Length: 147
Image 1 (cartoon, rainbow, N blue to C red):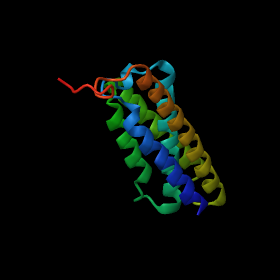
Image 2 (cartoon, helix red, strand yellow):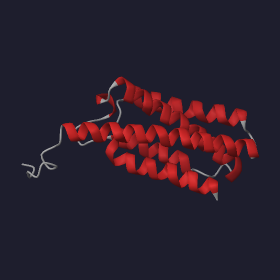
Image 3 (cartoon, rainbow, N blue to C red):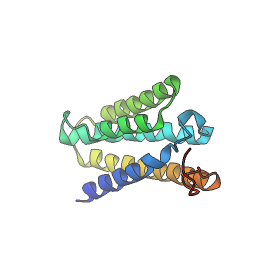
Image 4 (tube, rainbow, N blue to C red):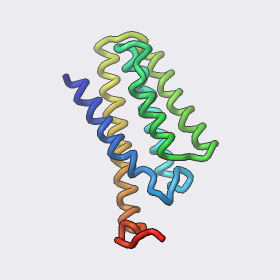
C-alpha cells in the first residue's frame, strides 16, 4: 500500500511537472546549468526506480522506463544532452540492479528512497519553471491571441 502511494505520488509529480518542464519557447538546452543537473539527477533516480521496481515486478515492467521516455520527449533536448539523460538513466538502473538484484525488504526501501528523491527533483524543476513562466508569460497567457 505504501509502495503504491509513493509510486503514485512520484508519478503525479512527474506528470504535473512534465507539461511545465518545457514551456513552448524553451527546451532543455535553454535551461540554467542547475536545472540541467536536476534533470540529470532525475533521470538517474528514474533509472534506479526502474531497476528496483523490476526486481519485484519482473523484467516486463516498463512503468519507469515509459516515464523516462516521456521526460525526454517533453524536454526536446539536443542530441548531446539527450544522450546524457539516457546515460544517467542507464547508470541509475545499473547501480540499483547491482545493489538489489532480487526483491527484498532492502530493495523496497531503496525503491521508496529513489521515489522520494525523484519527487523532490521533479517538484524543484516544476517550481523553477513556474517562477520563470510567471516572470515572462507568453502572449496566450496574457490573454492575447496568437497571430
